[in-house]
Length: 414
Image 1 (cartoon, one colour):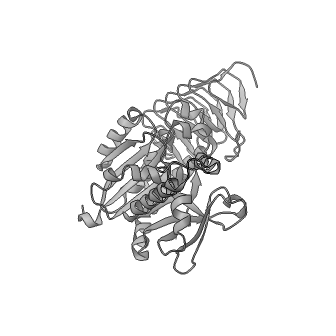
Image 2 (cartoon, one colour):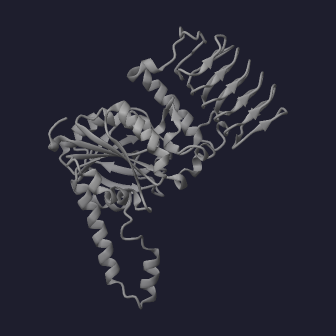
């Protein structure tokens, strides 16, 4: 551990049950941040990335979930990584910046020189040590991770303009109606403690405006009804946009992969991205073609140690597992099974000669012999993959295609 002036604290915003509606039915059984991607909870990938930051003092998870839903995971990951991980529950919505400010006393208890802020629904390689070094060189209050995307996709995110030489953030607008730039905000930030002063300034400005309103004025009452609460501060509109062009904020561009995990389809894509990354960062987590279980493995595949995979199962044609396959704890994969681009969750049984492609198979589900469960493979489409919810049951010789269900009991061909 370095001196107190060098310490870094990481904060991961994990949202809450009302924020994960697009992730249903998967979020009905487990908090979205704990859903497994590449065999690890979604938030685990961010925590592991934070662990690489020099002089990391502590990691905070901030959200609306009940504390008991994160207690076991937080305890386990703290012991595994030997870094304190703490869950802080918001009492009410404060906004992305307001939530950070609400827990400022906890965040600043180690007197960190920098605060790393990440959104949990982000999937990327998280170049945090390199970003921190760049941030120190810029000398500003904050640095945003940014990436270039297609002009057609840019307006789904926060678009920004940066100085091509100094990387200073010159202009920022959240989800504009007209095209501004192909450079977007990745939802990963590094700030100095001055961020709390900037948030407090917004609080004070709102309170001052509220005090100037005349309660007897009908227009003022209408304005007050539309106004945000004084303690609700958005990072993008209330902090980034006003401070752009004032030599306070800078950008760090990543040339690696980046996605936002809003839907189950994107979770399957991102699971594959993390599996590909394992080749370089954690090859021991990937199953090999000469694995002791002798299943035919093609591409990047994760198999939990407790899963049972029949030696004749293959994760490609004619009998294959992979690429982009994640098999969770206590799953049972029968002879001749083909698995391609799928997530198999805990306690699933897939019987002989079944095929699963572009799908997520829910906890304790069962796929019968010679059955086929398949999606189209368009990760961006609402029905781009097939999902079986918890305890779904597909009988022998049944085809389930292009379907999302909380629970399936399929007994006839579809």
